[in-house]
Image (tube, rainbow over all chains, first blue to last red; front, side):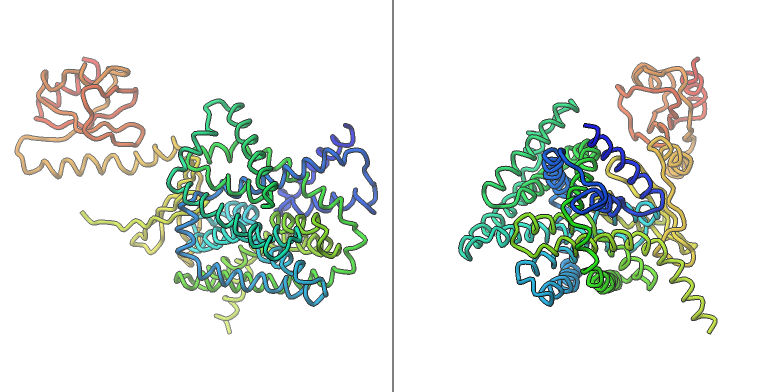
Length: 383
Length: 160
C-alpha cells in the first residue's frame, strides 16, 4: 500500500511539473517507470499484480475515450474530406518505422508494429497543445483535426490486423480474425450512425454513480469479449466508444477522463517498468534518427494538407508541426507487440526512446514554430 | 440589410467554429465547445490564418455580450419595419412588475392595444412570446403600438 501510494503521489508530482514546463506528462511517466523497474535504481516488488491489471484497464480506457472523442458522423465526414491527406500521412509516417525495423532485421511482424508506432500522432497531446496555445480558432486547425480523425479510423483497422498478426495465427486464421473485426467496425459505424441513441440509452443514466458503473462495466465486458474473439480488447473498447454518441458521449468523457488519466498513467509506468533502461542506449541513435525523419514527414503531411485548403505558409508550418507529437497510442501499440512475445525485445526500448523524444519535442516545436518562422520571414524581407 | 457570410467549420472532438471576415480584413468569430463554453476569437492583422486573441467566455458572459451588440439592432430593425405605418412605434420596455408571471397576466393588449413582439432576456431575443411566456427579472419587452399605448404599457410593465 505504501509503495502504491508513493507511486501515485510521485506520478502526481511528475504530471504537475510536466504541464508547468509545457510538455506532456507521458515521457515523465515513462522515465518514472524506467527508474523503478527492472534494472532501474529502485526495483519495486509486490505491487505487480495490481499494476498489471491497472495498466490493462488503462489501455481499455485510453481507447474507449479515443472512440468517444469523435462521433460516428464526424468520422465519416472527416473521412470524406480528408482522405487524401490521411493517406499521405499514413504512407509517409508509417514507412520510416517499418523500414527501420526491417533494417534492424526484426522481421515483418515487428515492422508492422513499428509502422504503427511512428504513424500515429498523439491526439491527446495535439488537442491539448492547440488549446493551450490558443490556436483552436486558427484556419489550419480543422485540417490538423481532420488528419487526427483519419488516424483514429486507421487505428480501428490497424489494431485488429496487428493483434491478429501478433497472435501468430495461421494466414487463414488471421484473415478470419481480421474479417471479424472489419465486419464489427462496419456494423458499429452503421449502428452508431443510425441507432446510436439506443446504445447511448442503454448506458445512459441521470445518476453519476450508476452511469459510471454501467460505462465501465460495458467497456470491460466488450473488451473482454473482443479479446475472447481474438480481436484485441483495445479494439472492443474503441468501437464501444464510437457507438456511444451525443450528449451521452460528452457526459461519459467528462466522467471517465480522470479515471483514464489515472489508469493510463499506470499503464505508462508499467510499460517503463518492464523496459530495462540498460537496453535503451544501444537503440538511442536509431530513435534519434527516426525522430528526425518522422518529424519531417509529419511537417510535410501538415504542410501539404493545409496548402490544399489555401492556407498561408505560416499556417502550413503550424499545421505540420502540430502533428509531430507521438504519445499514448505509440506506446499502446508497442505494448501489444511486446506482450505477445512475437517481436524483438529491443522494440520496447526503441519505442520508449522514440516516444520520449517525440512527446517532448512535439509540444515544444509547436510552441516555437511561430517565433522562428517570423524570424526567418523578417530576415528574408531585410535581405 | 447587408448580409454577412458566416463560415461554419466543425472542429471534430472539440466543437464548432463560426467566423466571418470583417471589413477591416480580420476574422471575428466564436468557437462553441461541446460542453457549452464559448471562445471569442479575433484573427491577427498580419496573418489572417492565426488568432491574435481567443477569449474564453462563460455562457452568461457570452449572453451579455450578445445582448450588448444585438438588442439595439433588434429594436432598430423593428423600427425600420414599422416606419411606413403612421403612428406606430417600437419601444424597448423593462419588465419589472411581472417577474414569475405570465405574459397573459399583463393583459397588455386589452388594456393598451399594444403587442409584445419579442422579449430580450440576458442578450437572447425570444421572438413572438405566447400568453404563457413567463417573465423573469431583468427582461426587456420589445413592444409595438401607438405612442399613448406604449406610455400606458411602460407604466403597467414597470409596476403601475
